[in-house]
Image (cartoon, rainbow, N blue to C red; front, side):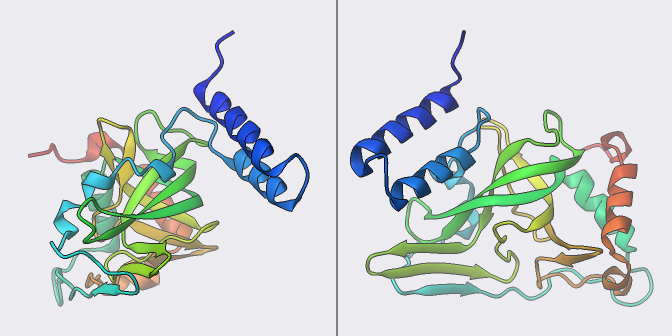
Length: 243
């Protein structure tokens, strides 16, 4: 019988924890619960930061210092005021066609880290998929790593934070629709397009960016069932060929 690596890792973690803390006590109970909640699929956990090299365009060349908050505010870069502005369905279709995967699901854990030069913070999220609208190899129940710009790194000398109005953070336990770019050589994902995340709040969707000038009908028309209905009706073959 072949033992999967993830089970071996969990067993070693429990053994190590028992040697350090003993088999009793509240601290060991916490560790055990964390291990039981760890992904059991053969994926790279977010805590290993597999996408550290995916945020080159956000680097500033200056290290962020402990206690510092780096805030980036971008003005809406697109807008189609007046006649001829796109319908919200056109925007959803464009997002669907330009990204490698589109899924809904829940964030289970998150870990923030600095880029290799220390000039920017990104966050890796472990994301549990509950519906796949696009994405070969993904299925309901898949656990994936999604990396997103921004976050907070805690150090002994103070927190290091990067905030962007284009990329609001994802909340643990919250439900989202994500439009994802696949990092092909490692099987992980990033959300680096401004319009790449919607938070599901029952019947309503909330766009996680303030940097896009969206059509007038977008806010009033994007109920959860409307957007998911459009996504379910789309297929990759309906997208224009990539240039």
